[in-house]
Image (cartoon, rainbow, N blue to C red; front, side, top):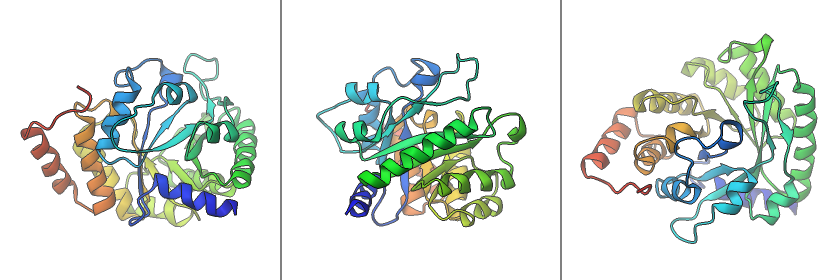
Length: 276
């Protein structure tokens, strides 16, 4: 019964036809404070929803204060662990919420960050495993944001390390794994083929449009299941238009050139920016 519940909820955060997803993490303020683009949560949620994003990732505070009551529906993924960049160990993540509370808030899924190679890796392994058990009990999808961190994993695009990172997340029970792009179609294909659950690529630090779209296109060609893209979405001059371009690549198999033409056409037409 609970597996059916998980399948139903997965459909709320993915595209039923493509089985891929475009997720926009908006959970950055816990780590970095009130950064540009996240000053008004309802407006940015509306903007990316209008662009066609399948889901957003929020911490509980933003979820409680981010209700819109208007616009297109969008999936809610509640993030359950956290840390700040002001901490002595900024890679450490501790539990700040529960699966049951996420359900009470109306979340469709939950997410956890897993920093492999960090000093507190063992604590995070334990926390992700316990959340995974709760997710199976309650029929809730689990997104694990798995990254190589720490002294022994400085090369965050190393194929061997990334393969280990995503497989660890899958072995803990993740339904979807988000990780770094390894830099080429061939190398990322190795990552995808070595993981029994869908792998989506992280949007990475703020980059130009062509660079970001190219990374996403290549990850899809490698067999990836989509993208979780934060700053490149919510800090874009027109989040709605850029998310539309990303969705064209992920869900319609458009090329970067086609997506850029779509984006430029919307800019030239003076498409209303839903952040205004």
